[in-house]
Image (cartoon, rainbow, N blue to C red; front, side, top):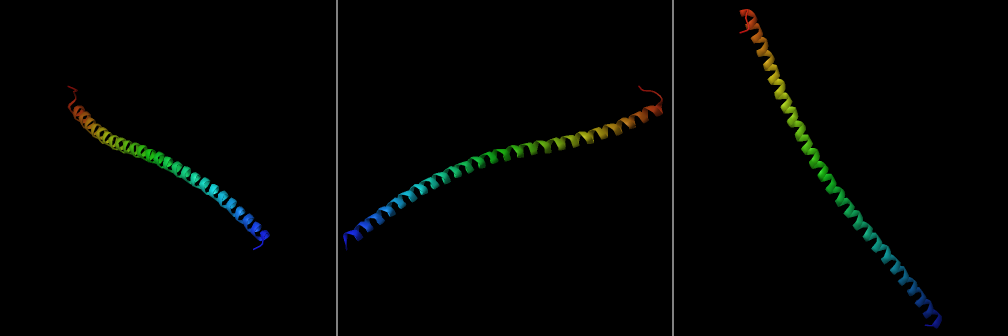
Length: 97
């Protein structure tokens, strides 16, 4: 091989090494960005878990309040009926004692 061909091959190998180093840097940067994105996703997942827990807790409270209000409504309805019955009974007797 001639000296020019040898120098040409050395230059080509040197360029290939520079390209490999550049690709390694890009790969390291991509891995770092992917790790950061993964961590960001995990943080968001934890936030969503907390929000879901709070929403479920709030939903349970709403259901309890609905049941409680329903019970109160039934109780008030019964009181109204008994009060009307009592007023009719007392009104028929002509006295309030």
